[in-house]
Amino acid sequence: MSQANRPGSPRQKMINLMYIVLLALLALNVSSDVLDSFTQVDEGLERSGKGYESRNAALYAALEQQAAVNPAKAADAAQKAADVRRRSAKLIAEIDSLKLAIAREADGPEGNSRALSDREDTDAAASVMLRPLTGRGKALRLEVERFRGMVEETVADTAKRRGIAQALSTAPMRTKGAAAPTEWEQACFDRQPAVAAITLLTKLQNDVRYAEGEALAALRDRVGAGDVAVNSLAAFVIPQSQNVMSGSRYSAEIVLAAVDTTARPTVVIGGTKLPAGTSHYETTASAPGRHTLDGYLEVPRPDGTVSRHPFSTSYTVTEPAATVSATMMNVLYAGIDNPLSISVPGVAASDITATMSGGTLTRKGSGWTARPSAPGTPAVITVNASTPDGATRTVGRTEFRVRCLPDPTPYIPLGGDRRYKGSGAIQRQALLNAGGLEAAIDDDILDIPFRVLGFETVTFDSMGNAIAEKSDGSRFSRRQLDTFRRMNRGKRFFISRIRATGPDGTERSLSPIEVTVN
Image (cartoon, rainbow, N blue to C red; front, side, top):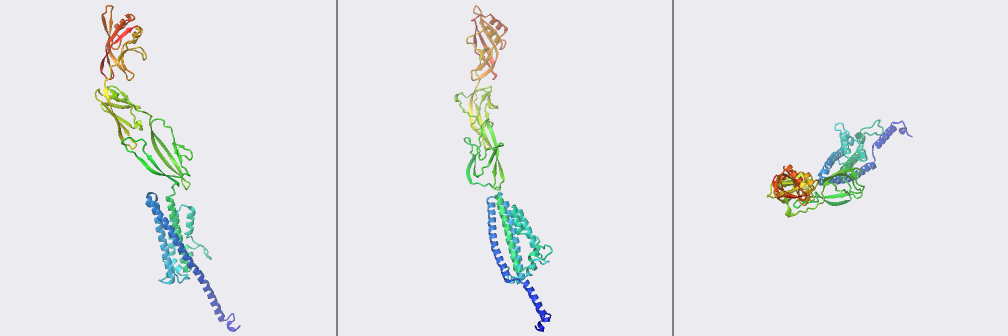
C-alpha cells in the first residue's frame, strides 16, 4: 500500500468523507421506481374520484326529483343535500389549489400537479403547507374537521359515522423517532416528496367525496324511512254517504290504497283489537240514530318501528219502516194536538226538521204534534233533512185538510171502560152509582173527552105527562135521582138538551139518549 492511500492519509480521509456524503445523498434521495409508484397511485385515485362524483351526482339528482314530486316530504332533505354538496365542492377546490401550489413550488410558475417534473422535491410541500405566515396546512385541517362534523350530524348509522371519522381523521400522529405525537399537517407534509404530498391530497379529495356520498345516501333514505313497504295497489271509492236524496250531491273520495299482503296492519276499534290478519269489522246495529266508529291501524315499517294511523267515521241506523197514507183522509182537527210520525228513509230522526203553515208543529220524543189554528184552511207540513255534506234540503211537503172535531157521544159511565150509550137496559143501581153524564169521541180513531155543561131528563107520569128535570151541571140533580129511584122496571126516560165543550173550546149540543131502567 502506498503512502498516499494509507488509512490516516489526507487522501483517504477525503475519500471517506466523500463516501459518507454519497451515502447521505442516497439516503435522502428517493428511487425513481418509488416516485413512479406515487404517480400511478395518484392516477388511480383520480379515476376513483370520478366514480365517487358520478355516484354523488346520481344521489343528488334523486333527492332533487323527490323534492320536485313531493316538496312537503323531501324539500328539507334536498336543501341539506345542497349544503353538503356546496361544502364538499368548496373543500375539494381548496385541495386542488394546494396541489397546484406544491407543483409550482417544485417546478416553477408553470408547474402542473398532474405532470410534475421535480417529483422528489422534499421542500415544496412543507413550504406550502407549513409556512408559518400562511398556515395553509392548519387551515386545511380545520376545514376538514368542520366538514367531517357536518357529515357526521347528517349520518345516523353509527358504523357509517365511524368509517367517515376514520377516512377524514386529522388526529395528531406519532412519527418514527418523535417523542410525542405531531400535528396532522406536520406529519403529512414535512420532508415529503412533492409527488407524495400531491398523492396524499388526492386521496383526501376522494375521502371527502366518499363522506359526501354517505351524507347524500343518508338524506335520501331519511325521506323514505317512514314509508311502509307495499306489494299491492287497489283503488277505493269512499262516499260521504251511501244514501243520497234526489237532487242532492253525491260526494266521494277516490283514493289509491297500498297494502303489503305479507304484513297486515293491526286494527283496533273502540279499544278492541281485531283478530290478527283481518281488517273486516261487523257490529249489530242497535239503537236508531247516528253512531261513531273510532279506532286506529298499526302498520309495521321496514326499519322495525310501527306507525299508528287513527281513523273516525260515522253511520246512521234507521228503523225499518214503510209509509202508507190514504190521500183522501189527510185530515187534522183544529184546536187539538194531532200526533204525527215524520221520517225520511236513510236519515236519522235527529237530522230531520219540519214546519207547518196555519198552526204549530212541535217535536215530542220520537214523534211530532200538529195543532192547526182554525178549520177550513189547509195546513201544509214541510219536511227538511240534513245531508252528509252539512246542507239542509227540503224532502217533502204534505197538505192536510183542517176540520172541526166531530160531536162527541154522551154516555153514562158504568166503571172501567164500560159506557152506557142508550142501547139495552141499565140497572137502576148502576144508574144511581154513575152520578152523572159524560161525553167523548171514542170511535177507535180519536179518544177525546168532552166536558158536559148540563142536560135535562124527561120522564112521564101515569097520565102520560112529560116531566123535565134539570141536572146539576154534569151531575144528576137530587130530584133526578129521586125520580130514578121511583121508576119501575122497564120504565123509560130521555136525557136531552145535552151541552158539552171540547178541547177546541167550542160548545156543542148533543143528541139525546133513551134510557131503559132494568
